[in-house]
Image (tube, rainbow, N blue to C red; front, side, top):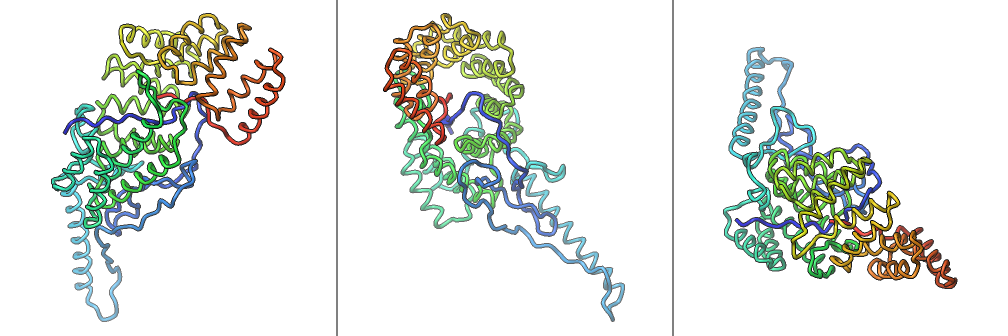
Length: 455
């Protein structure tokens, strides 16, 4: 099957606050009520692990087998020999159950991943750890069913609505199909991608989420996608490809802790997935775990030698650690790699300009930020930083123009209203300044949209 492209339309913020989640239970496969009390894997969001208004994640447990009750004392009138035979029968039954589970695992039906697996009951990866990012790590779980094969064909062609309709019809008559539920989880994520592309016009360069916050229906679909993976996991364990989409759903919901967990599990199964390492690096960065982010981006770059986004984000991670020289070198490397490209990524120019502004090198920053604006005129971040640079250089008309452009692209950003207000005041536009101060205060109090997200 051809590789499916998983582009993330996620809100990856620069230097976000560290997410702090209380300890919570994480689901894993219920093997047998007599041997394990662990719940079925639940990928759904819930109050303990998501800033989003959740829906209940607890699912009824589906028993695979029943436990056996073995008497320990002989009732009155029962021969000790009979008691011994009864105990032996119980032990034999338990041994058969364990043997059945061992055969099931070795045949490829692995239990779902759990945070702290027992050594004897650990999940097997769905494929060899030497596979590349174009192998099963990037395709939905395989099935021999003709209806699901047709669904996959529609999904590969981009016909997500038809695929959605067909797989739901299939699940009405096959509610216990793990592959059907997993495939619907993939389809729902694809629908989020398609809607994000429609909401974000691309002008000659791939700029993801240019100032557009994730729509509420997008978050709802991410939750629905997680619910499908949870439903499928009741019947057999998810693949590495399934876990990648689970992680991406959590990224879209802003739950980086759970995204980190499932990406880490996925990469334990498919360590040659360069895209997986990139996503883990972005997730670590959003958790403020910059050293771990550096390691993840370096792993990505070993597998994909000139991955421009990974090099740019490596620079961001070095900057987060205060290693400015290494950050600057990474940004410059990313810029050099695309010097001859027809379509450029604005990220390295934006990040290098931001670094130079942090070092009070405003004039140098302007040259990089102007190139970023030329590459991505509809991304608000370079306009914002140019406005900041021009303000410091006391070039107020230019600062005003750039900040107004940024506001057109991100009108709900409190930070931008706060920045443009003093620029108006210094030029004598008192009424405009007053209005912007009021908007700044109102939006800051209502948790406005953070600064422009980065892919």
